[in-house]
Image 1 (cartoon, rainbow, N blue to C red):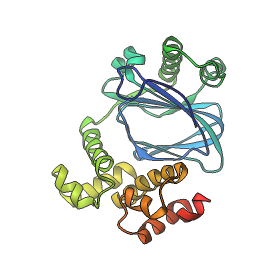
Image 2: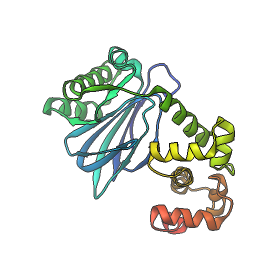
Image 3: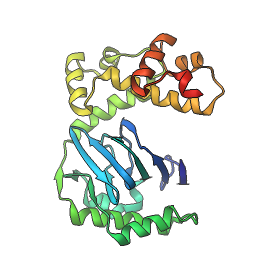
Length: 256
């Protein structure tokens, strides 16, 4: 559920805040920082090969262009803030070329209260309040989490692969077409993608398409067969099978 958005992702300074129940999101990355504050339950935070669990009262900070995903084992309620690096310019500069040794850290009572005042009180927040909140998060992160260098070349190839999926998922694409477009061998890309994301390319592509399909089903306006084609599936049968494998029910059942 969207709570707050200040400008959009193309603006110089932007932020978006959402509240999710039973939070789930496939592996993805973007150019912004992302904060997940667990209000209730617990959430699995996955970054490349690393998997962490954030419990109620804990936070997770994801850096720009860092592949990440979320899953809820049982139940969760999570506040998610995606914000551009220019909100925390000094922190972004200080951590350039490095990443946290982990993403999950404790939120102090004062920090949690400030975040809830900014985003859950119903009064909204201006740029100054957002800057203060995001810097407070970053300061607490640095107090708790050591930083380590990261492989920028690894990130660049992963960015190119995920950008290819984002640009072409409505088409009949495959690992081989991605390899041709990016200029790597399919065998190398297959091993690289599985190591980086934790799943094979075809499964990731289907999850990406199904996530978009869920959005279209919720919005209404298109038939199930139209949604299948819009999301890049070549037949209603393959759409139904992929949807059921991921969601545990058919698209028609999900729409009811």
